Image (cartoon, rainbow, N blue to C red; front, side, top):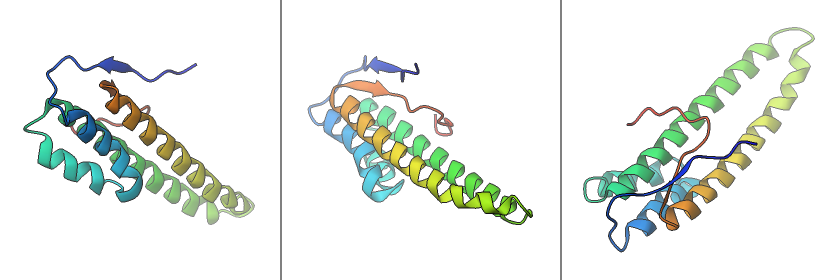
Length: 129
């Protein structure tokens, strides 16, 4: 069974670092990529802990956007093919399932950040290093 990689953070933490790290993940549920981006841009220089969680949350959101666009393009192409176009009705179900999985992973990331651990999202393209 797959288990996400979790590591304890080895650097120093300030009192509000865990809260800001948690917000990097939690705000993504409500604000999409803007939530973690705002927290990360304001705190990345002053907190290595927030820098790690912010980058991870932003990479997750960027990857998720790429996956949704790819799924939409595949759906559009399949809709034009006779006899296969009727299968396109499954794609909104897949997108809904992806959204549910994303919310669950964001909550898990927020909980791990609040515990002082580094959470790595699965199948995430690490664009920001």
